[in-house]
Image (spheres, rainbow, N blue to C red):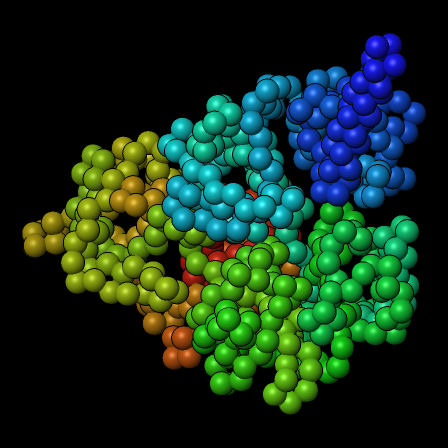
Length: 549
């Protein structure tokens, strides 16, 4: 009997060891650990997983530690903080948390999901988890959205954003809070260069003869570079996946890299190796055949794509399945003749709204009637798909104390009360009236006016065009022309060609009369920063409306 008891005890101990070992193996296989911070001992971190399992894991030499999206030291983490950890092998390479005073902080036991946004359909958001699994969740009017510690509108969410979803109930699919990662997720540049060093132990890539893609062409960067690369990210050549350990065998080969600015340091986010010959196309994607994994361009040329094709949209990396027919973009293809494979697809398309969550619109027209909180706009134009569309009609809008109104003739802000009481609209049928109705640019959310810029005469819309681009440097002030900025990688919308047309030089854009909108609200020149993406309506070099994306 004693012998049997010993055997049973040994079996139970073996089962417990096997279960614990299986749990440990699972996190290393997935490369992700989520739970609660316990303590840091020497160069190791002790964490309690949601299931209750406790792990003690060493950190890599250059571990990245963040709280509230900001770099910190390990001593800043406090016991009980909820942490998200990514692993490199059996070591911690990244850990983040939220401080107690952060509105997005969640108490232990509540449900959290972290992932990359794959799709947005009004109140439905699909994300890809770190494990590769896809899940769909829903928003409600009570959902709180934060980014960089600030409350923002859900319409500022993009496909490709990295997000944290918080839930008040373990069984619900409705999100209570959304935290969107800051601008460190944005793709800063596209580089091309010859591989000289591929160090898989330290995840370092070195290149020479480096070019950067600017203003529609490759331009020499003027220096060699050595940058970090996450060895867990895939690398492809000719549509075939290769191991990071074998990258050293491709020394001397040309590589294309999507670069991020990670807290002031450049970092490679995705990379492909050129197999044969480079072919560049700036075209419209006419059709996409998902069965054959091919896209047909405007010149009737078919180009293959694959899981490793780098796709950039709204300056974010997105899944290859986010490619859409009708999109304009730069396609860098590898191959020869009719056998071409896309290494990189950079989608140009921008609009006022980032997705169908948003209902923002831009109008211009005559201020026909102004009541205490209502404005009637007559003979107006609506910016629709990058073009002004005219309506010989009258439309009702609402305004309130939060509406920003600016008088361009007198260069001053006007209160809603003053807007109603002054002669910005008159009875033009009264012959004694020597004044006329004013005109205005209205930025609206549905039928509510968020901002209005008003003036005595109507601008000629025939001279105006829609332009997109990236701010090369923060705005500066000119003694004669006022504030201006330089815009690189700009494109103009062509109504004739029905596509975005690249410009081959940097633009000077003047801001003297510009209505500047960010996060759905009017902002000042000082809120435009280097690296911002802009969507604008301009007359020659004079901006009329700028939307900071």
